[in-house]
Length: 328
Image (cartoon, rainbow, N blue to C red; front, side, top):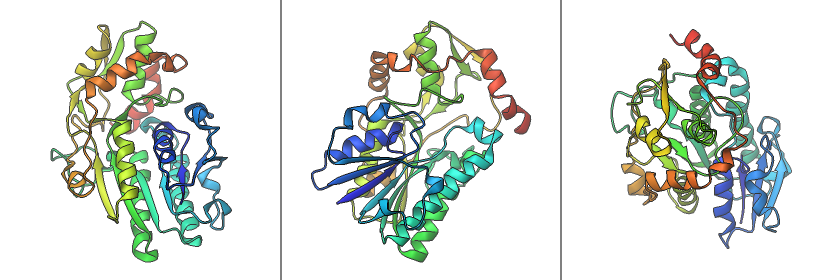
């Protein structure tokens, strides 16, 4: 059995590759990754004979790409994340997250690959009206990033109908854990806080900190991907979260005693809460890692973020200026 993991050198992808390499039935795990952050996340795996790593941009995958030959399943995680840059440069996001997904699907069709597991985004719910939010609740696309990830999901659903490709789409909520990205644009709160803590600076809390996020540990997320692969269930969309909303103020207090507040951004939800009843029923998946234990593990490995950008009030104001200008 051979599998492809696009984005396999990234945060979630590298953890997934760890898991897949443990499966004795899988003979080859093929990583296709643009390697923006190099091979840091997979350096411990490079001597594994079951692993093949190719530097590959999903925007340049052709239908007859030989790397897709004799592959049984594709895990499609390659994407550009972060909301702010998507507002600045929507075309780049569309080319990677939508056209890149189309290229993967065409290569699957050409090579007769019948299964894909897709990393979708809970950002498609925008500012939800119902909690906990179900998979069939209203779609409310607030940002170009959300649009492109949802468009990728819609492409996969359409390919399933027309070309009989089987899919599982996992709408990921707030994933955190070791190896989360340490470079690039202002983004996920966990990495921002850890670098600030490491630098003995106050944490910057957006708004009043009473907003909640549905944090889910990357190891639990990987378990959901693996179960999607091993299970015979097909053509389903699942929310992947902890279903335990955490206040940002509570997260901040677990990390540091020093923090201050920056203005709330338009278009951001006050609450994030996944309904995971469907995935619990059909995949028998449920989160196992307690949030406090996950944060403790990050603090024990905080030096991983030593090279991450340090954000303060002024830098955040500058980085998010376009957000306020366009989404008033």
